[in-house]
Image 1 (cartoon, one colour):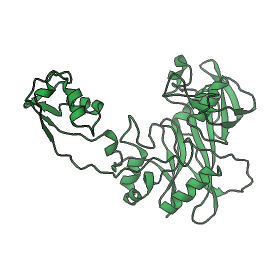
Image 2 (spheres, helix red, strand yellow):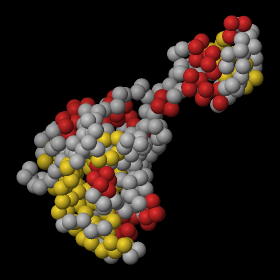
Image 3 (tube, one colour):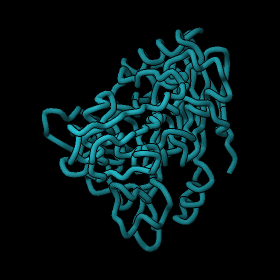
Image 4 (cartoon, helix red, strand yellow):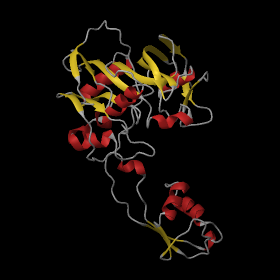
Length: 347
């Protein structure tokens, strides 16, 4: 299925609700310098006072500006030698050894390097880009994904974005969620878009395929916070650290998939908490098809990712003040899933 996208003027009184895909628009990641200068090796001559101590423990004391865990990683990686031989973490110091440490950059020190990452652009001018992010593309470097992200690709295609915090990124989509995102090309545009996100006037609409048959229209208003036992997950929570979250949904169609009931829904978010649609729909018993994190494990293989697509995006142009809206059809894999369920993808 193609990526035909249209832009049109949007009336301010249209019934859209704003959404953020991060936990608040002003939670911006500090900018890294984008480069790493090689650090000179560190040579240490151990003495008798260190005798009997474990090597990793002694080095974390002697080189206090590096953590013990980081030193252990360097030892395990072969970047520490004792008298010219590769060190071992549990090596016991005898005294008078010559230790050479070759410090290595932390993974995040390479995070802001330009890389040739492909992504489709559906609108571009001097101030903004609108991207139809494919599923599988991580938006911003983070733990486990320090390279190969949209940010790396933006820096490769637009080197000037190195001068804009987070290469112009102002909001995110989950790795396996497809759909529309806006990126600022200038600091002024980014500042304006962040303010729009904070004011919840950026208008976003999602399509999702869920297991079961929810009500025709629904409103879910429960706070979301970190899962109490699984730090990877979010959860509906009454904890004081949980943040208010409000999701509206409308059932567009119902059918069956592999003899189980499924429904295509349109979601509009008044807040933008991490994993909000996935958590809210799961909390009322209608997990997203393909969601291996929040769905039913035995049903996850039906689709390789959560069936969630950011289908519409509306905002005020940061330079011209024009109300703009873009829409993008579901990608080929999602369209095929809907076809399997005998649901038309023309929504």
